[in-house]
Length: 421
Image (cartoon, rainbow, N blue to C red; front, side):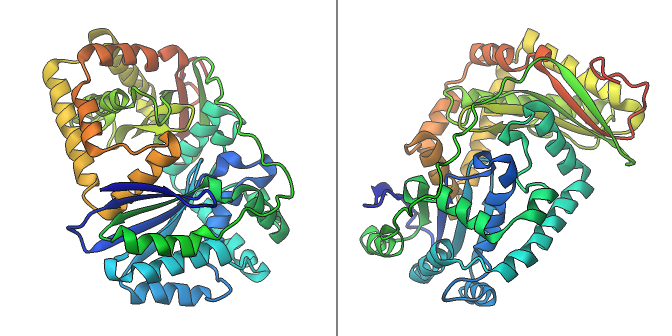
């Protein structure tokens, strides 16, 4: 059972009752992420996510941790380019306590100067951790190569320079300008009674009013033009070369998004995919090889990742391009399409068996499409995909003229990637 309610202050509440379960997942999603930041504010959205757990007017950071553990529940948060989410998952009998705890963090966090100074060091360590993980780092570098100076090309964690110079007043100003009821979705999935839950939601979120903003919110930069084929090498002393090869993708709510998921799965979305079979199983060129989609409100990316020894870099790029050309020219067989559809539907249904997966889906549907998308609708959309649909999308997305290659590691100077040394 799905239900949507808009509170008097504009907060959107989306609910899905799963009466056969004994748990409930609650998420508070702000439609604010690193894309909303000016260059001087890089990393602010993620920093605010951290600070929400560092003490409120009623609870210390230790009390917050102790309370959620005492409930036997889980509490966490994450920041993306376009959203920041705070969530709890508990037994259904603790829903009132969980709502009180989550609302306290969201509305009453203190942002003490002492805690901000400590958290700066924590986030600087998180940034260093990314720099030490080649797979994470090459994706970060690739984002900059593809999107340039656009906010979507900047790291969500921010840069060390903005973290070290960050002041409490700057953080609070950003919070005041960006966080308000109309940009907030409360998403709940699990076992509950609507008539009991709605009064609590009004109590904890209905009285929140938008403060007087100190400045106009930054307008979002439009999706950038990816430009033409290019490559960039970042030489670093590593055991392997890590590669990202990027193509244009689709926005999150695009009508062809299901076709794009089928395309991605066939290309590099699993162990039966063409890239995995060709590069790892048949040629032994890589241990890790996969492709993935990144969708945003007005654009997207399709990225292939591989890690290989330095002497095989050109060979890996060549084989990936060859498989992409083959996919575009010859298309897929009916058997391959049906197998992929079954794989996608299975993954989808398994991922939505739990309350956390349903809560995430509810919130994203509301944020990006403004409506509920049922599991039955999603399965129907996957089932209707034809070979011709795939062929047309292949030609639209997998254009080697727009390919962007990022290489990180011990790349020899003689190696040429699309004409760049």
